[in-house]
Image (cartoon, rainbow, N blue to C red; front, side, top):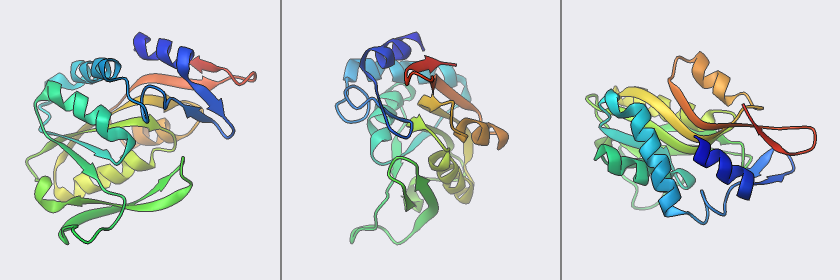
Length: 189
């Protein structure tokens, strides 16, 4: 998606360890008209898949998932990373390792929000190692639902996640595939 590539070149910052900071427009401060265009693009890519729900992991993917869901006219369900007192005991769970946070999470989705008749699209901001998508796919499988695919805004082509997801037979649509050259500059694949 050319619009996303242009914005990455303009506003992204590179940190040690291959961390790409896009928090000024995508996942901390959110440029809503811009993210709306991302949602429109995900709709274009998946509109023929009869999506009934969009699934993401808290927190960075929620806004993107919501703006995408408006085009499909379907609900967004997000997996929670923390156990709280008001969390329903009937949940699907999966263990996810966060590349960015460097820790493991047990993600949880209330069973009542996913059914075997659902056709689910996963939406997220980044793809690095692929663990969030793998964990969400596990939850979808537990529910007996159908995973139609995964849409990510930015795929880090220099990490293994894209290959891992595709090797599992999951349709993956990345709006921008980025690499970092020897001068610590972003290039697109």
